[in-house]
Amino acid sequence: MTEARAIALALAQEGIAARDDADRAAAAAEVDVIGPLDNPELDVVREGGGQTEWQLSVVQPIDLTGRRAALRDAARADADAAASEIERRRQVLVADVRGAYVRCAAASAQAAVWKTYTADVAEALRIASARAEAGDTAVYDVRRVRVEASAAEAGRLQAEGEQGAGCAALAGLTGIADPAVAIEAITTLSHAETAAGERADLTAQEQRIAAAEYRLSAAERARLPQLSVGAGVRAQETGTGTQYGPIISVGVSLPLWNGGGAAVRREDAMRTSLEAELAIARRRIAAEQSAASARLSSSQAAAVAAISARDDAGRLGTIANTAYQSGEIGVVELLDAYEAARDADLSVIAFALNAALAAIDYDLTTGRSY
Image (cartoon, rainbow, N blue to C red):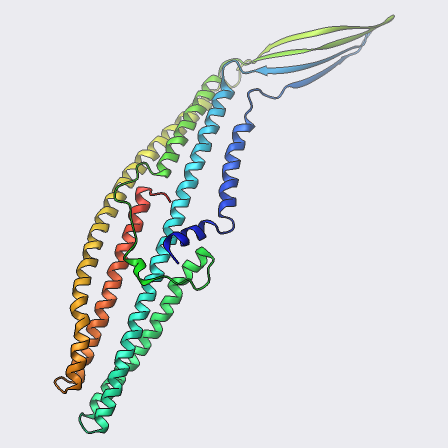
């Protein structure tokens, strides 16, 4: 499994696209909820007495101040913010997939190292046993190697268990049971060379502020009197028949009990709060990006240094094995050489994994998109 395929499979999992589409549809519907006009009212009036009179009229509020237009603009800004939040949620999911991907690769590599180490110790036990039977070495060597072989087997079993656990997260995210990831995945992982610009979550916060400004404008416009226009028909029953006539009405709202000042103060306070949150987020993200950049540079340098040490340690096992078979060194030196090679390999994997995770974190903090 490649990194690109793992990401594609995770994004294609059931519920991901449906949830994103539903969130976008809900945000878009909020715009449609606020139409250009309020719903009209239907009034029916009946007057009794000497003469019965009926009045039927439709009253339509007219938004001359532009309050509803401001609310529609606020809903559009909220919809844009929702789209940015969906994009950031997608970036977080991709980072989770990439992290699971490299952890699976590292766990597989560690299991391979332990398997090789176990095979080397088993071979040493075979040689030591043969030499002991021939009287060329002490029984102590056999017992010493046997102890190390038991420890190596335990380490191998634990490493295989970690491999299963490390790849289980990737399997859960991609829906692929028992995914196979190449060992080279932890060293070939790419990352953005420079910051990708504004992060999607910061963009969402800016759009929320824009929506708050539109709502503040709507609250200020709502303080003005609202005009309503009505039209209908009147029917009056007389002793000789029924007379009909048109009705025209004009109304103006009177903000006597609630002038809208509290609503303006509330919207203004909410906008101020959002602006403060954005300033805090900018400082926090700038610090995160600086830390991620420094961590990426240092982890990559450490991985390179570990690789150079591994080359020397890898040759120790071959040299020591030849020397042990010729009787130049004892079993303790042989096992030390095997352990040095094993530890060097595990160290390279650990440093490479740290560098890969640092690259993933750097991409997430800088807002890299896929």
